[in-house]
Image 1 (cartoon, helix red, strand yellow):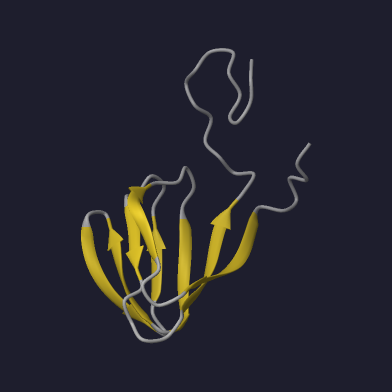
Image 2 (tube, rainbow, N blue to C red):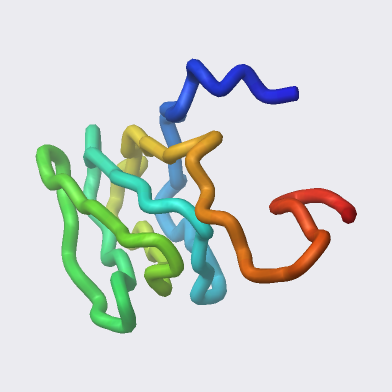
Length: 100
């Protein structure tokens, strides 16, 4: 099972110029992005927002999002996500991410 003492993880995400999340997606957990390098437009809750190095975004659980890295340089951010803190879903007998 999961080690519940660990409740977050961080990754560095890099998009090459023209890179895209080609569809609006959501995640069950809230998460944050700290832009390390480059520029992009990020769709947050159906609004396109210009972001660049030094910007920080905090996205609520199930917030619709997408990204287009249209700049001449790589677009890189540090991604923080909650883990092991998911809300229980109201499906009798079903555990999150598994079978009954």
